[in-house]
Image 1: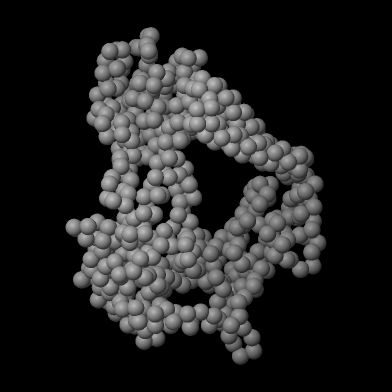
Image 2: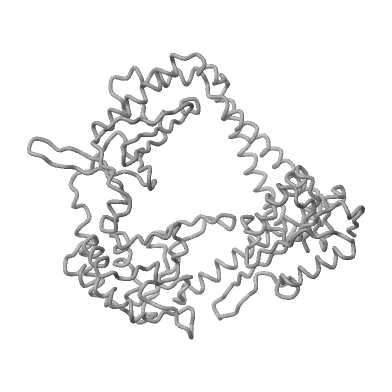
Length: 537
């Protein structure tokens, strides 16, 4: 039973969270992510419960933090972040939640906040119904470990159900996109079915007809811009993904995506992307052979014959470039203004061919006027950058004060120990998974499971802490001898190679005014870095 002594010293933050995720299975049945959320876990219920607890214990509530419709598998939540900021600013020193699952479902994150962050900030955490109170750490530590593990298992199990549900719906040809494909609308009678958008369909047909007649994607994009055709982001409801309000206009990439989309034949393609795992937001684009495609699921805008002819036209343009160019700065040099890589454009003259840089954002949006060409002569720019790097190397080698900034450590030993500890953590994670399976089979009772799990958790935490310590040492250790060797090799080489350049440089930025900034791989070289101001046009 949670008890509060000296309630007057606490400024309380009430934290509530509700995940509205649903799982749809093949027969149309809907499963709520968590039964207790449906019955008793609503935001209003959580608030009332927490306020009642505070009233009974005479606690002063500073604020209530609400994350409605946010999964417990992530800790990047708007009001959670606001609560953490208030803790940093010493506005609250107690956090109350209904139960531990409302706080979150990832055991590693829960351990960090309850065992490190809150303790360092002098914050007391209470999960009332789970009887967890960090003010009485000796009675709640094992329960935290036990509860957080099962809460995370629940997320993993839910993720599995979601994947299985999606596969079932995909095989049935259900539309599972959040936003409709350009040219279609969600059917108001069936959200998993498309109907034609009669205002946009003519634009799609015109694009396919132009492509069939031999127009390139760039030419089609220009026609769309001239006609002021509405963009997919303006129609399909996903324009919130834009980081700014610039109307980027049509470009060849947008046109090509439309021309290659099988949806316009009445097909549904699912499984186009895949999340790495339930802990990560990162997605991977799946190869075409791994996607689930079901034909004749909605009215086609483009017939299959026209679609196939357009694909043939696209294929015939592949490989038009008979020569690819390999150049020293390839992949290293970027546009300072927009952050995109610079590409190479040849300009042929009677006696020779000259090469110039060009910003990729500008190249893809010429008719819209996004960014600027950043046209710089390849040879002059490359020579200037090499001179700048060599001068930086000379400055470092000539000044003992720079050399003294780097400590001569045993980098190989550090890396070896880190690798060994990382392998140990993988082994521990495997043991934890096996431990749960044994618990599920009834091999361990709750007490033995909790004891073994806490031990493994402690071993993992110690290994992770040791890795962080070693990494900090590794970051600081930049060996004097290693730096000298790399710098001398670069200075003494007769012809700078790609390998020698990459060993020193991580990124090069150039502005429209041809101002150059070089980012080096060694912290030492980045100190007192100055921009190159020379004209390299």
